[in-house]
Amino acid sequence: MVALRGDLGAGKTTFAKGVARGLGVDDEVTSPTFTVVSEYSGRLRLHHIDAYRLSGGEDFASVGGEELFADPDGLCLVEWSERIAEALPPDAVSVELTVRPDGSRDLRLQGAALEELLR
Image 1: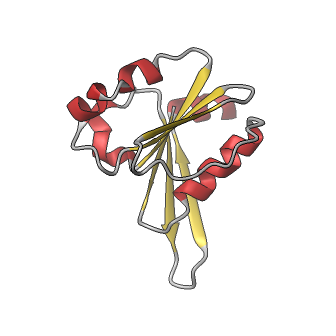
Image 2 (image 1 turned 90 degrees about the horizontal axis):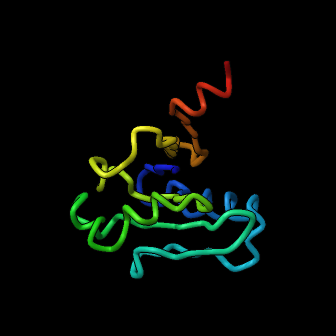
């Protein structure tokens, strides 16, 4: 599970497109802002979730979020993950995108699973 955070226009959907391409997804990946969840088929099922319009963990559960997180053959990528922070699993990988004054981007990755890979 990947929790994406960043300001509007920071590149969250662009990051999601790169993950999808890496998974072999052939479909065009767009922001699921109005649908909340878009699913794509690749080497893994990609559940692309936009939590911007959700009001918290209970709202996320009402759209089937817990089932998406439990998919053993899928990867959940959650844009605006801070909106549902209480619903995120403890092993979530956190990706934070920030825009510098010159327009370039910084990417910060955190998570126990990543730290384990680096050991």
